[in-house]
Image 1 (cartoon, rainbow, N blue to C red):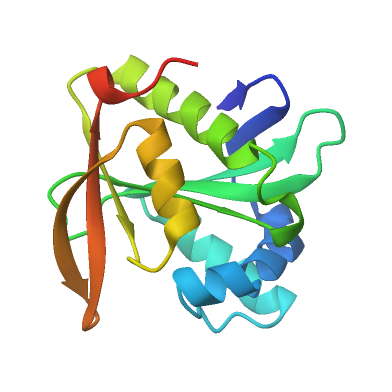
Image 2 (image 1 turned 120 degrees about the horizontal axis):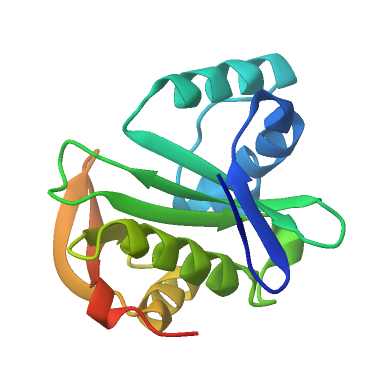
Length: 168
């Protein structure tokens, strides 16, 4: 599956993305807001990707710049045991922050998900201190729903239904 937007291509994660994912997993934003996955080598990154690819309940989509095919971030969509609805997430390499890429990719991917299931409800979780991600979620149309605790840490839970997704 490949999805295109004005500036981006969104495609499934593959094993050849190991170097890119290694860089992303060790970026400050990932470590501060998502957590340390203890992936420090390309071999560990390959193993991490293999685990992701084996799970039917987990999708990682790579965001690439359309004109260069350079990977700049990921979108995730997964079913978590502690959340009723599937969880959506995003992360970009630091050099691509604040350029509209996360919004563009997220909107395109979410519209795709809703086109396959219009009755879908999608969740997103975020640390309350992560104001850039919170602002992006709200701009997309997510609304705050609750606070949940994961690994003894409180997280904001946001929900999105098709009718709340902004049209762009």
